[in-house]
Length: 80
Image 1 (cartoon, rainbow, N blue to C red):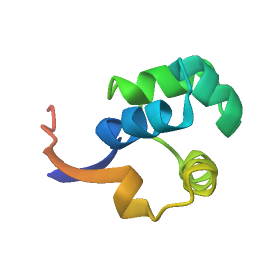
Image 2: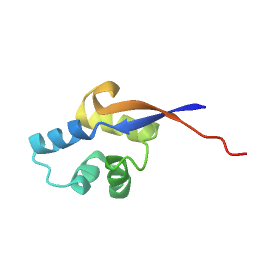
Image 3: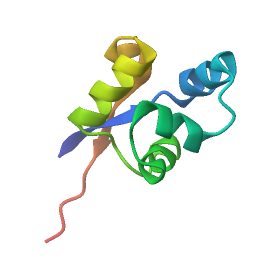
C-alpha cells in the first residue's frame, strides 16, 4: 500500500528565516501561530502538517503549497 506524506520544505523555510531575520524555529512558530513543538517536529520530518497548519503557513509566507511543502510517497507495510 502506498501512502502520501506531506513534508515541509525545510530549505525554503530556513532561507526565509534568514531573509526575515528570524533567529530560531521557535520564534518562527510563534509568528506563524503554531506550537513550537509542532514546528520543531515538522522541521525534523517527525510530524506532518494538517490543513489548519498548512493554511497558516501558506498565509504567513504568502506562497503556494508547492513552494512550502513536498508530497512524498511511502510504502506502508501491512502487518498480519
